[in-house]
Length: 76
Picture 1 (cartoon, rainbow, N blue to C red):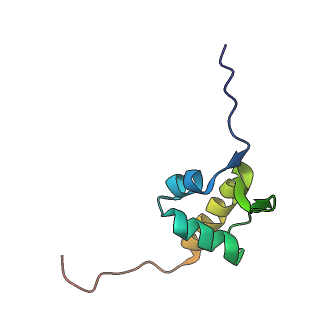
Picture 2: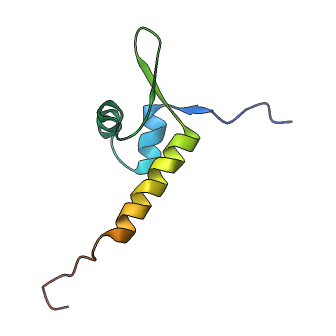
């Protein structure tokens, strides 16, 4: 039996791996409020819930669908 439970809260490094960005970029997203996060304790340990990260990704995908496609002006 596997006793390892999935983490209910992700560390910034975990979020960075999912988004394929740097940890610094994740902190910037969290501090700006673009990516809702929990600041836990006096030292300010940041965590993001998996459902919050999934919702953030869904929002980015929805925004991407509304953008006009980028057309390369250089001939192929």
